[in-house]
Length: 275
Length: 167
Image 1: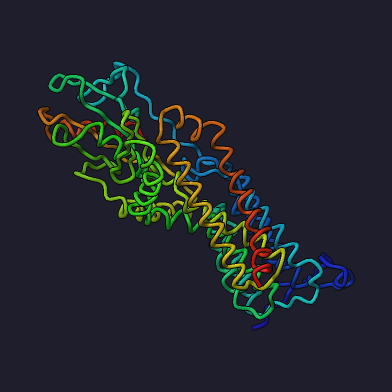
Image 2: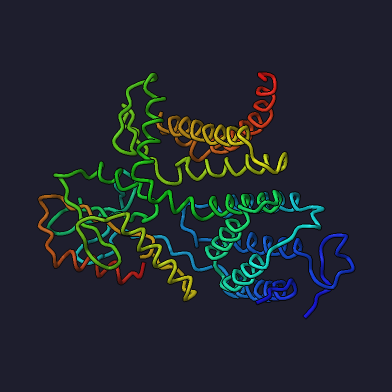
């Protein structure tokens, strides 16, 4: 069975699809299926639209990484893996699509071709944000949430009398908040790292020490801003309303974007100036 | 064994088209309906009250033996944050608590075991293409005044009433 469908100028007259076409179509399928909107399926505290945006961002980054890569060559084992991973896609399951994303990503990361390796890193990053991070968070929550509450309490100490018990922060006024999984910086830190990885991949295919520092800085910025937001919600019911349900909730992602853009802009220049 | 580009592409396309068809056919799974107890609704040996607990979570009930002080709250297996708030609002030893999870009464809920069980159910649901049930995601905790003589038979009737609501 042969196909006339192809992607890429050099394959225009080829009767078999190119390896790049196979990879792009498969990546498109797993990203689309992993972000297929299923209201209510993932629980009450996950925003499908937010995850869909990250899927689109990573898909676009992979498309840019592979643009003009007509000479990309998949191994026989890659094609076998893609064939095997295609079968579970028949199930209407986002989890299976995320697992397929993970396996293909892990298979591509060790490749010598920096383009394939980059595609693998982006796929694993996306699967981590979508699927593995929430699972890990559920196991880490018993110690991570009290730690995040502790960080928020540290920020509050100079401003008044606040107490903490586990993940609960109590103000002297009687106002109490609890840090739950949805408030945790863990998944959002993974998203921040993925955003920075996308920025890095658009700049250079090979990740070096400077890029690792930039990713670590974006994760740290996410944790710091989230601790500040938790602290602000603990001040009073009015602050809680503003920073948990109101405009304050929109300000935080905007601040994170600004922070990531600032790190991406200033850090390489600061290093260059220091050198 | 040779894995040609054509074979990989054809399997991928067929699976992709079948996957799209399955997703469109499956639609969105039903969202478990929100809990609601109208005032005066009998619930096992209890009767629902109009007012809510101070913590804002769950519902207050009264019984002939315990007055207005019993509270029942649902907690997500995935997000264990609100339980400490309710525990603070109904502290021991003034209150004792009873957990109703997966149709059974227990002394406490083990989140880690509960989450592993949730993952098991999720895998089974994926394989059988079943929608998730409310009991897959939530457990209930009943706060009983220490002075309240709520016995095991009454607790079993509350459990049965919860099961009958098919939440």
